Image 1 (cartoon, rainbow, N blue to C red):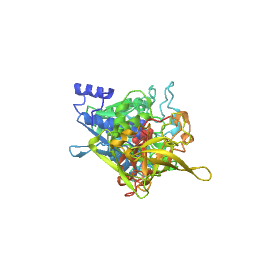
Image 2: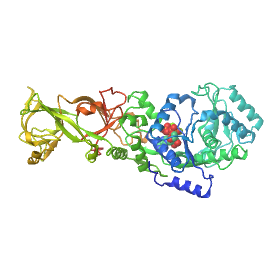
Image 3: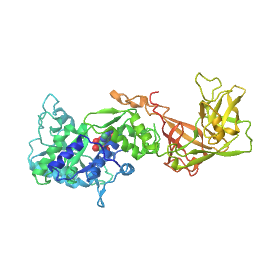
Image 4: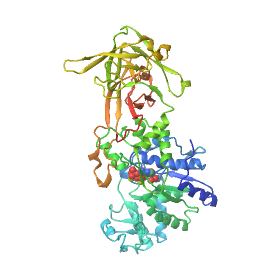
Amino acid sequence: TSPTPANFIRAAIDHDQRSNKQQGRVVTRFPPEPNGYLHIGHAKSICLNFGIARDYGGVCHLRFDDTNPEKESLEYVQSIIDAVRWLGFSWSQDNVEHLYYASDYYDTLYRCAEILIERGYAYVDSQSSEAMRALRGTLTAPGTPSPYRERSAAENLDLFRRMRAGEFDEGAHVLRAKIDMASPNLNLRDPVLYRIRYAHHYRTGDTWCIYPMYDYTHCISDALENITHSLCTLEFEDHRPLYDWILARLAEADVFKPPLPQQIEFARLNLNYVVTSKRKLLQLVHERHVEGWDDPRLPTLAGLRRRGFTPNSLRLFCERIGVAKADSWIDMSVLEQALRDDLEPLAARAIAVLDPLKLIIDNYPADQSELCTAPLHPHQPERGVRSFPFSRELWIEREDFAEQPPKGYFRLFPGNRVRLRYGFVVECTSVEKDAAGNLLAVHCNYFPDSKSGTAGSNNYKVKGNIHWVSAVHAYAAEVRLYDRLFTAEQPDANGRDFLTVLNPNAKRLVHAYLEPGVQSMQPEERVQFERHGYFVVDYADSKPQQPVFNRIVSLKDSWGK
Ligand code: ATP
Ligand code: MG
Ligand code: MG
């Protein structure tokens, strides 16, 4: 793996390294909430955090930010672990696994809250959430202090302990930081640190009935793990003063010693023609608009994997889009090009006929067949050749024949000659139709001395070159062709219901005829079907000797065309 190009985050870390601000250490973390499957946006964060740790000789922790009991589950935890591993990253260093759960910090987080209360930095507010919101003020008007703001530390401590003990209903009290109700930054207007929730947590069960808020949990988790650089998306920029405030108050109390972790924000990935919000992905899955979290149409990492994207192509994509401080939209074609660039040198070639039309070679003996050979990879002769049979009846692509050829058409039409790629030159003699006039088959004669790779082949100059498979030998397979999941570039723009722009034709099934050799391909093995694109053997629906193929991407960018 190549080192990631420079960016402003690396510049900041270089600066810290020179000034020894973080004592020469680089420790990052990737902190997903296990409330859904990871998506392509998370890949950006994963590549950034793990990439930086790798390049600076540090480590990146995988931390489950699991403080919303209602929405989290072990299934999601496992899917996230699988996705990060699949992308090729590791959270272990010197045989230590840096896999953490914020829920493991509940005791410590609780203890820190007591310390803040004791020091007059937090109080129990007993207003309703509506009343609290009403006093919060606006961007232009300062907030108003809660009537409970001046409770004594002793009273606050007593109430907080009773909150924990389960003496109150949900919503009866919250714990708030005591910062500044007049701050121009709304996040500093006494943010809530804890709320009461009688909810079962997938790891801590019913041990807790108060749960810490994200902003409170996150900075303390970072400090507990000695994170040096806490990289997060831009929407947290306004939360940074709160991050720093909480850690500074706890450092005052000697809970943490400097250097404290520092938050640095970067722009999130926005990719067109998809949605990357876990809530919306969840809706697509639960309402069965797609077939599951790993549906090849989804931008989840599980979906991209099943579609056939390689880990390397996703890392390449993340490298190419870079890391910036301003939001922008990335075109889907950038992701697809990364896949092509990764697979071009790797994928062996094979032939697939996706929309078959029968071609009959009348002067070829019915009981005969012979082998034709083709390179496994046209630019890597050292990889050798593959061979496949030629016989009297072949399948060709329907679009490679025209009864009335349009101008400039070089493929097959009555009276015209083409080369059957890697095989013989044929001349079209007639067509066969049913009573309704539908084309049933095309008849040709072949030229026995025209076989590719033989001396005689040079005597035939034809403009068209079409692909084919032998009808009796071909592997008849199910092939899935995918298109974008949404018909709009920004499906959820301006509050539009993204379901209204779902593309009903995003998945198309075809019954194709494939070069026989591909029948032994293994799940997740990839191939380039000449002219049609890159394909992968579907890991879920394939059986031994019966692979089912997903098209990952076509050979050329056909978006919007
Ligand atoms: P979502 O909005 O999809 O629920 P999230 O940010 O709530 O995403 P988390 O599980 O909290 O999901 O995300 C884990 C990490 O991934 C966070 O550090 C977050 O900033 C980062 N991340 C999430 N989405 C993107 C994105 N589109 N681009 C870059 N980083 C992202
Ligand atoms: Mg989040
Ligand atoms: Mg979220």
